Image (cartoon, each protein chain N blue to C red):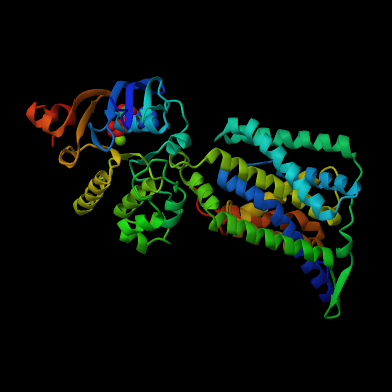
Length: 292
Length: 240
Ligand SMILES: Nc1ncnc2c1ncn2[C@@H]1O[C@H](COP(=O)(O)OP(=O)(O)O)[C@@H](O)[C@H]1O
Ligand SMILES: [Mg+2]
């Protein structure tokens, strides 16, 4: 049942794991912020990822620069996410089941719209020209683009950490989570800040979609492949914890790649078993605060 | 007559179907301190919630320096210069002491005479907070949290300060410190509503007294008037 792998394969698998981990972080950081700060279980998050990837595909088809395409896709998704949050989700504040149903419904709607516009065929854009190929070091080849995904994820992680933990804006968001009515009395525009967080999360998901497209490709069903991964990451790491999302992403990146290589028959067991264990043994996640 | 700093006129307020405040009216003069008394459940905090916009009034108006704020959301009322030291302190527990102050910071409005409050001037007033500026607020003692709640309110450079039972649950020495702070703030010219259940804490510091009983204004007087008119406090406040 267990497949043998060589040490060269281990290195490649490790790099792929780091790259996938970085991508999962870009995906789940937004999910974690939205769930941890606003308590909204956003089941559209996988759809945001896929729609963002499709946006990127089209922008690239029009000859746009890769990074510009990724940024623009993020901006477009911020606008769409912000609209859904303000117009619809806002009315369901604090009602978890209606939020689940609404976001799930929207996930299906987005999937159908994508199928209509981008058809059922897979799209696989090429990475930006300067990142094609590999660098050689210690007698091995390292795929450049995947290293870049990792670097971007780490940069985003640092930027988010500074934003949330070290700026006045971040402190205002956390105050709005601690005690929403008193935060408003103190003069904090809690509702606008939460919309901002939602937009940021949506933008990150779409950005991740474009970043992932060159190695995952984009196809119908990608949304509901990514959503459970974001859920697992957030449950492993703990909701609302950026460090947790980062560590959870890399754990999952490794489980995914090594699990598929070594135990191809047990891929789902390897993905979901750690999540089940955490849920039973440490429900707040590895780095999560106990929610009150 | 000059506009008062804060005026409630015929306020009716409900929680669900229960009619809590019934035609409540009173006014706080500029630079004065109004002691709002009443036993537990009399409606003091409900008045405060109406003023800060957390509980919309069903009838009546609230004015701040002559401007109607009755229908404004809490953020906008804060921007009009109303700050609250809430009952139970309610500091932002997961934020540090310094962050608790910074999130509330607001430059003073035009025409403010007092030197503006900043984190540093708040720390100057409460050296214990300065020592703990990087600690998480949840780790502070009750007295320190009360100081932080007061400091947070001052950071908005308010024109009207509402303090809801700032002595609640504190040791006598700390209560004395808090009252000394209230006196200092009053002397700086701030207009203050001080909510208390215990009249003794209020009588020697207040300019005006309003007593609520079952959601209605039962008495409007001054500390001297209270003694002169022989108003029976036990009738409205229970035994003290
Ligand atoms: N959130 C609430 N929902 C329903 N009833 C409330 C609520 N808050 C207060 N009350 C009721 O309103 C009345 C006045 O309460 P409150 O204004 O808190 O009194 P006080 O501050 O004078 O002790 C009480 O009878 C109380 O039970
Ligand atoms: Mg009260």
